[in-house]
Amino acid sequence: MTQPAGLQAGGEVYASMIAKARALLPRLRERAARTEELRHLPPETERDLHDAGLFRMLQPARIGGAELDYVALVDCAELLGQADASVAWNLANLASHHWMLGMFEPRAQDLVWGRNPDTLIASSFIFPAGRATKVEGGYQLRGSWPFSSGVASCEWNMLASVVYSDDEADGIEYRIFLLPEADYKVLDTWNVAGLRGTGSCDVEIRDAFVPHHMTVAVGDLSGGPTPGSAVNPNPLYALPVFSLFPYVLSGVALGNAQACLDDYTEVARHRVSTYNRAKLSDFQSTQIKIAEASAKIDAARLIMRSVCLDAMEDARRGHIPDMATKTRYRRDGSFSVNLCTDAVSMLFAASGARGLFTSGVLQRQFRDAHAINSHLAFNFDAAGTNYGRVALGLPSENLTL
Image 1 (tube, rainbow, N blue to C red):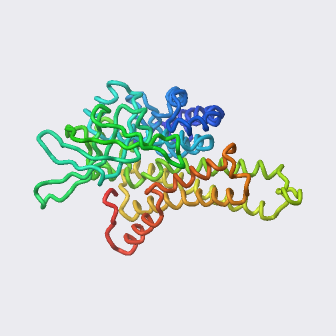
Image 2 (image 1 turned 30 degrees about the vertical axis):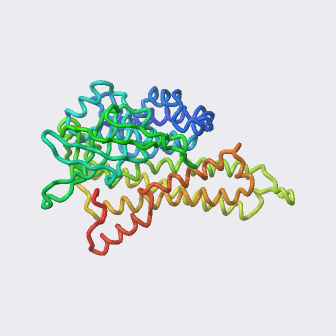
Image 3 (image 1 turned 45 degrees about the vertical axis):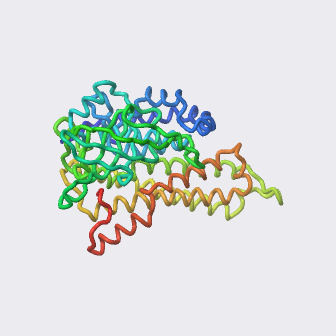
């Protein structure tokens, strides 16, 4: 199936979405300190994102969504990340769940979007945090999940769990469960140093019944047709979800690093040394720092976007990536974010004591960069080890790929 040109990266709908995101940057910058103080998105920011249609960038067009190419997540998160990484993080997270819901059974899609196509869905994809057992018509689920970003704004939650069977021969299964907010309790645990405005609180379920059609097996999200394909035939909804998972959030690191570089360059143009009144712009070390940081950021952008564009092209051809390709996606996702973190750390160190003041944005950019990098999806040791295993002919250790 060929996607209409307006919905592809570079098309009119895509360009309009990017323009709307760019228009929000001044007011998001103005609210950044308040967002940190609140520890979640301000209501007016959430409304701005709704009004711009950004939450629905990957939602099926049949529901009224933009149904953009997957790379839109990287591009929009990069833009918003230049103003406030917490806003970009929540936007990308919550927008990606509309994409994932498009892969659930149509009954689940109709239930959620039939009530409100603008509804927001949180998540926590930490499988060992939950325990599910099969019962007639569905599953009984319990557990306690950390890091459910933006959960206070959401009416639904996608929670990952291991499904256990009484028959040991059946083994275990990884599955995603979609529940209404009445079925889980939000615990106010988000007191952190970075990404403070994301409201990534814990959620707890003591015992909830989840109908089978409100769940999807991880094996059905590994690339190719999904339970939602009958109503959402766009190749966007045939992408391998967890192989590409790093790119849901990688654009946040990219935008944050680009803003840090832009700010550092602007200051260096005019600042003089405290000790000898020499212009920083004349220092070779300053020039080299700008060159190195910009090279890392530009390389990261090329890696992130090329993976997303290549994956979409493969999906259009009906090609399902093999395990070597999937582990490369994960390797490149973590590596590119690590490049962004390195750039921010280098610029922070080069800024001297100026960067320590809480009245400036540099300290927030530094804290946010390392908070982003702490996500398991960006742990290069984990991604690199698994890539190396597969390259050497060993089985993948990541059971979600």
